[in-house]
Length: 204
Image (cartoon, rainbow, N blue to C red; front, side, top):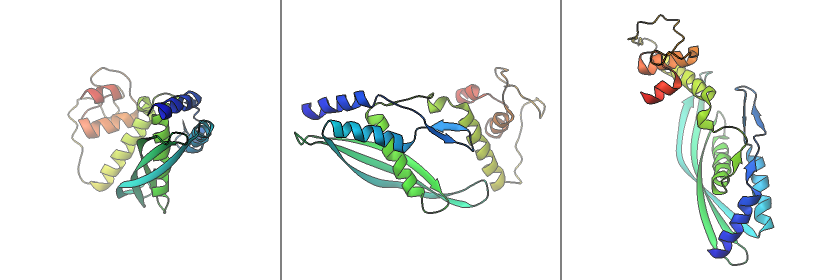
């Protein structure tokens, strides 16, 4: 493995970082485009004589209802990437997961694209220009609001029991008293029966 490892170190050096040039206009956030990752990685691999083969395995295929009440397909895929040193014949394999959702026939392709993108990002420890996605509270709020909407649609007659003495317009965390948005409050009451900020939700 000495030869391919040496070459992959050089590839990693050339793929140290990738910018988040993509923009989601609807949710107003930036993201790393698969094309940008493929471009920088492929060029580095070619520069150092490394070929790749990629296979995909569908791990999950299900359905979900979007905010317009229409059914969409949700697919999760595992990508297996094999790097082959053209000089020594040595190989190294890595994997990555990706999910895609689409109302038409593009869910699988979206999942495959995401899986390959993250396979490369993780294999070469590529740094992204924006913050860690797990620290993006706006995404947490959007997902919380969507979960509540789906729960309400599925159980419209089931009331939410509120054990807090705060008023319905409470806009502060009942645990640490930090201010919280209305969406975070609604999600917290649905799942914890009281208004909690994101940090306190994780604690509970």
